[in-house]
Amino acid sequence: MDGEMGTREKLLFFGKQEFLHKGFQKASLRGIAAAAGLTTGAIYTCFADKNALFEAIVSPVCAQVERMFDELSASYCTPRGVMREISKERAAADLHKVYGFIYANFDVFRLLVSGAEGSSRADYVHTVVGYEVAHTLAYLERMKEETGRDIALSRTFVHTVSESYINAVLEPVRHNRRYEEAIAELEQLCVFYAGGWNSIFQAFRGG
Image (cartoon, rainbow, N blue to C red; front, side, top):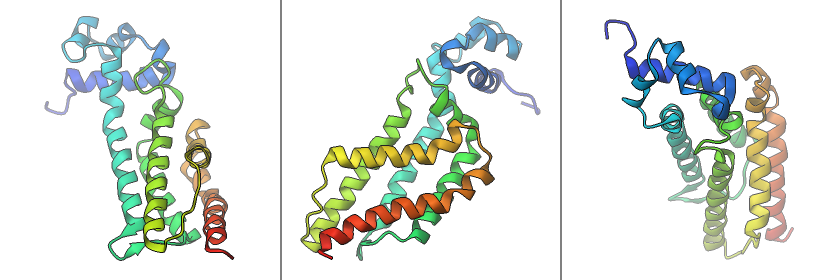
């Protein structure tokens, strides 16, 4: 492209700016086309509709989020056995990785968390909560298989804790905080959630 953006690249760039400024519902294809120096018809040569453009912007990051959950979850259940205690240091290392990814893709996370209403990703935070619930339940089942102790937590309870945790992690995105501000609160977050889970594990070990 000799250093210049092609039609698709322009639409992705100016589409993201329009969605960030107005949110999905109020963004207009006409406004995106005008900012890109294109006609509205040019958009339809690349994308079926406004939602398809939005999806093209956010879906690569969404796919990476799902892979990150899989990788982090797998690291707690290794061939040597399930990790039976969650240290503050381990939780902090994981959250550093998560925040590094979030802030490398901050504009997209802003769209997903605060600007997706009306789009196919309107419930994206709940989707992420669902990942956390599924991986937590799998972890607890693996622990039961290895220890013979059933940590009998209801799915409702796991969902409640997971929703609280995911929303706490995403709070800096909602409030457009700088990376340094998010990291400054990371240790307290890890103390709170790792401590809570370890207290539950201790109670089911009987002391």
